[in-house]
Amino acid sequence: MTDFTLRFVHGSDFHLEQPLAGVADVPDALRATLVDATYLATEAVFATAVDRRVDFVVLTGDLLDPRAAGPRGLAFLVEQFERLDAAGIAVYWLASELDAAELWPASVDLPPNVRHLDAGRGECIVHWRDGKSVARIGPLAALPLRREGDERLFTIGVARGTPRIVPGEAPFDYLALGGEHERHILHSGNPWVVQAGSPQGRSIANVGPHGSTLVEVDAERHVRVALRTCDAVRWREEQISLDECQHRARWESVLRERVAVATAEAGDRAVLMRLRLMPGGNHIGRSQRERLAAEVLAWMRETFSGGAPAVWTGGVEHEPALVDAAAREQDTILGEFLRTVDALGERSDDGLQLAQYAGATTLVDDLAARLDFSTAQARDPLLRHVAELGRELLGGEASAAGLAMTGAKTLQGTMSAV
Image 1 (tube, helix red, strand yellow):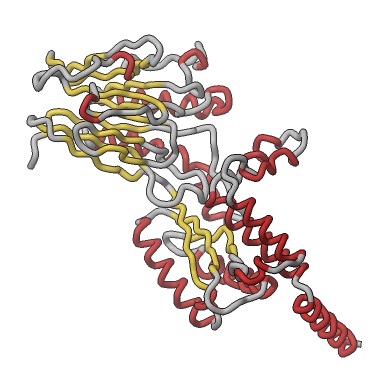
Image 2 (tube, helix red, strand yellow):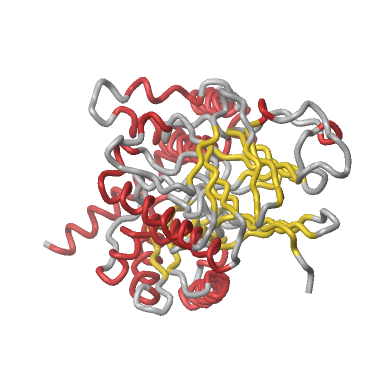
């Protein structure tokens, strides 16, 4: 067994003031878990520190907004700090604008093991154990400009965002970053640069495991970095080809396999799932896809929401097939429309600027976030639906024939009913 001389946990972006988003029609059995998910995941971060008997915990901001978290959030965080204090574990906290020290209520005392790191003042803290210095922790501005030799203390830099780092000249062994909800290892080894991410995914945009980072250093200064999963619920997205949805028995079988994999990977956590029905070789119209999506959603919820662990499907989305190139090249209104849609897809600088149509409402910030299509991942599905709608409405004789057939069938059904 490796004898580690230093062990610490790196956590960030708890956002205790934020509940999970994008979950609708949740069954009663899951409601309490979803409401408390952020707190349960954060508690697991501190439990990891206690269970692993770490020397200290490094926190890199956005733990909570003291103005929005309310008494519960403040009391909970203080309770977790006190839990570490009782175990002899120090806390080094680089706050962000959200949880800046001056925003903390004066009436709520922090325990003595909590030390704030001030990015502006440029001061380092040396951590001692049994009368011996074992590590130096500080913001980048406080660290020496370059390495001081093999005998120097193991050095941990803290920062928000993603600063530019030259690995060979870095004045630290480990850089603890905060400010993003997804965990990333930006550089592995000499030095380590790690974005901790949030311990709990907030929405379907945060799929996969989330947690804290456990860092262990041995006597030879070898560093081991590992994710310790803490999330209380696991977000997951699955894609299934529409070609696999021609027969109900087939798509039921495929989805049972996907759910089995999802639950095995999630362990005892509930799974919040979104399905996407992707275009295949056979063209399936929008109305047929909508009926299929509703049927799949009802079956998923009925079949898996009561399991252990539960799998709750928040929605089933369907993607239209790409419009063929020939239609785009036509010298028609449809062709011009499709070329305009293509041009919008190539504009990455303004995100379509749909937020300007939200108007002056109290929900403008939330609406603006939902109307943010600055990334191709968000923009492309929307534009595919726009192109499909244009094809249906501007498709000339084919569309007219389709509308006439639909009208004839509707009239026939009405006459039969009479």
